[in-house]
Image (cartoon, rainbow, N blue to C red):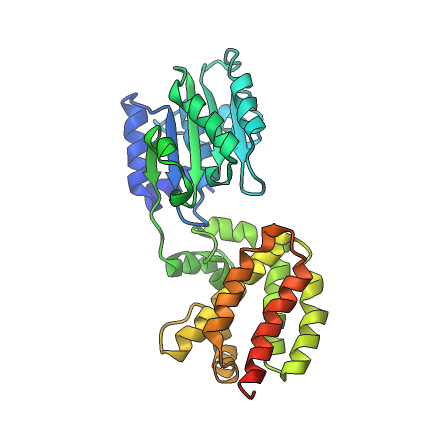
Length: 331
């Protein structure tokens, strides 16, 4: 994906702001990129980093020169990327940046750059270390920080950075663009809720965690169409074995939340997101009698995934609530 074209066409304000800064040589030493889940913040940060050292800037990165390609390959000595998407960012991670940048730049451009993805996932000790590092930036050191939850970012970090807000894109636009690129409609409908760019959707379609979660979702819907006792058995046989990783469970619960939100939507006559599941939605809106409560249970259970709770027990709790709640209503 050419990030320059994406930013220019989909995020023109962000694009023009950075374009003007680099064109007039009025760069900030720290940028904070903020956008909703699924926005390509890390990819954008890498593009901006390329723009600072590109051999053939226009004035932003050409994305084709040897320097840009080396950054894509993770082979540029003066760029450090710390990704908090999968794990917490600790104090030692920040110290590693400080120690590396205490020495002179290795590359000919003389600029040293670090990217911290998902700074909302930093420990308090790491945040304190980062603040000290941001307070007195060296002339040739630049930072790109990203987050999806601005409310979890300290005001002191925001005040030391120039903020670039990425706008939310209409999910239908992203969905239709993904379908035009060859995505199956159900994949486009599901993944446009997670990713704000059709090219990322195309990359995620083959992700094993997503595929296992999607299969689990469809098996759950199929099971709920049977009687309640049979539903529990089918989910144990056809869903639980697929959800081995925390990431697969996150996908699954998020998609199950989308399905139950659509159950609420169709009940009150609002538009639905999952048109491929219209028939199932129409059947289950009459079969399930405590949809809103089930949705709340699914959403609250989602927050417990990182608390070392057994995933099988967590799924049992959710499904038993959905099914047994209906039995209490005489279903």
